[in-house]
Image (cartoon, rainbow, N blue to C red; front, side, top):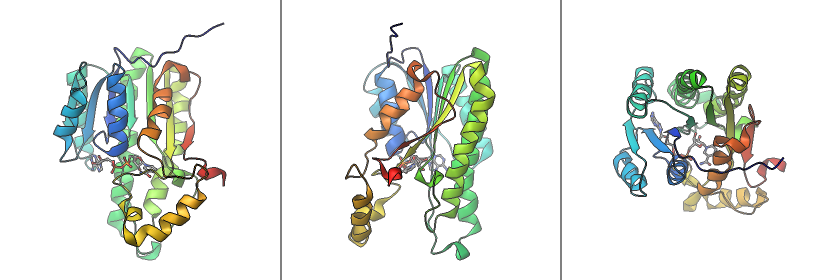
Length: 258
Ligand SMILES: NC(=O)c1ccc[n+]([C@@H]2O[C@H](COP(=O)([O-])OP(=O)(O)OC[C@H]3O[C@@H](n4cnc5c(N)ncnc54)[C@H](O)[C@@H]3O)[C@@H](O)[C@H]2O)c1
């Protein structure tokens, strides 16, 4: 049988949390260019201009939904705002995330523990729960979560980030186990070292030495760029991945193979 795959998202409605961030914006823009109506949920002060920039590529609509994902009421309000404007959701990309680094785990603050888990893990679960319920009604949905290489190893001085990303990998499987048989696939991507606002340190003079060590360990020989994450996410959002669910897909230039 010859299958016809397209990455045409015309008629699909996508929510991208963290859609004003470097990776989220790249994904939102590409989904929009390829036909999806998109809702961007973020706390960024640059949201308006980013939404306008994406909308400048033409139809369909782009919705700008400011929200603070640290607050559970705001998560629910933001999701409802997406429903009020798009009247449904087919694709959810949970890209919002933060990382807090402490001097050591023995002095790591409760605040840095709580806030990272709240945004990276709890908001991802709540958004998935709300979107999943809508998707299950229609018998179709694609949920793409953001894991990390820290889903596979613990790193140093980032206990809450590693805990949140490890848990993302398992909550992805958990939701997939319940929903895949009803048309909703749930997967995660695990980016490697990607040049974004999340990790400016390695591009400073102080971070240069560590940066050299990192690059020497990446088989692809370079940091990733936000664009490197687009293709894998589009694949997981498309019909081409109908039988792929519950996986955490590394997009890391081969780093985990070392
Ligand atoms: N950059 C990397 O190397 C890397 C590696 C692995 C995983 N990731 C993951 O990729 C995802 C995207 O990160 P990025 O690198 O594009 O970083 P980024 O900082 O550019 O984007 C993160 C976005 O999340 C938003 N956000 C943060 N706190 C929020 C809150 N309280 N409410 C609403 N929105 C909030 C930010 O405003 C920002 O737009 C994150 O989940 C991150 O953990 C990144």
